[in-house]
Image 1 (cartoon, helix red, strand yellow):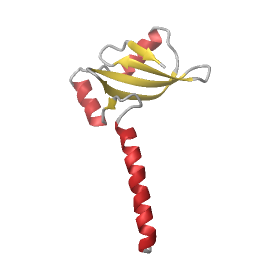
Image 2 (spheres, one colour; image 1 turned 90 degrees about the horizontal axis):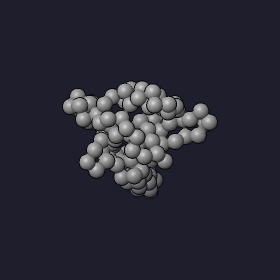
Image 3 (cartoon, one colour; image 1 turned 30 degrees about the horizontal axis):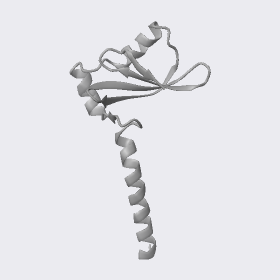
Image 4 (tube, rainbow, N blue to C red; image 1 turned 90 degrees about the vertical axis):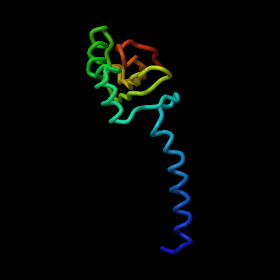
Length: 108
């Protein structure tokens, strides 16, 4: 590949990496989401309850919705689960749940 094609390609790759990196490490509301290893450590240290327990508790409280995505994130002083749920109506909703006790913090 000629040098004249390599330089623009490298610049484009650098720009994509610059903009994509923050999205991979933080949730849209500036929460720092944990890596898989950090998630396992938080569960082992009993700083967070398992996601299955959170979902079971939500169902028992009458909340329905199919789990689409879940992230365990550090939010200020506490760990939270950021849940993306698909409701029966087909509407996608986001819920933030305290990871220590499974209680709903907010919904968007």
